[in-house]
Length: 66
Ligand SMILES: [Zn+2]
Image (cartoon, rainbow, N blue to C red; front, side):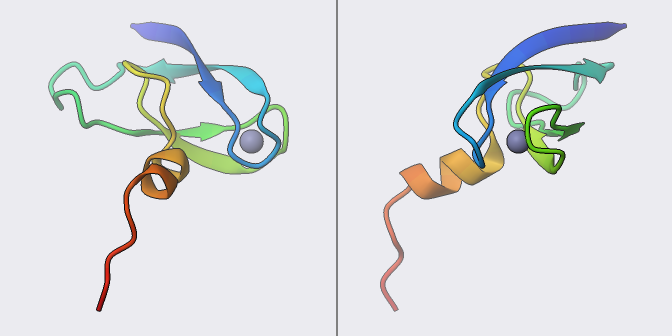
């Protein structure tokens, strides 16, 4: 079953509608779907449950010091 969700394109910062087939029903809350972005034409990894992209999540995390 396909679901429709909104996410924010990390390239352009626009709200984009995406959809995914069988949106990780068995994969838990950390499942990311590869979505072909209709705004910028790239592929983003998006969590359909939260609308967060993997790029945005990485940017939000504190930098790791080495
Ligand atoms: Zn995009």
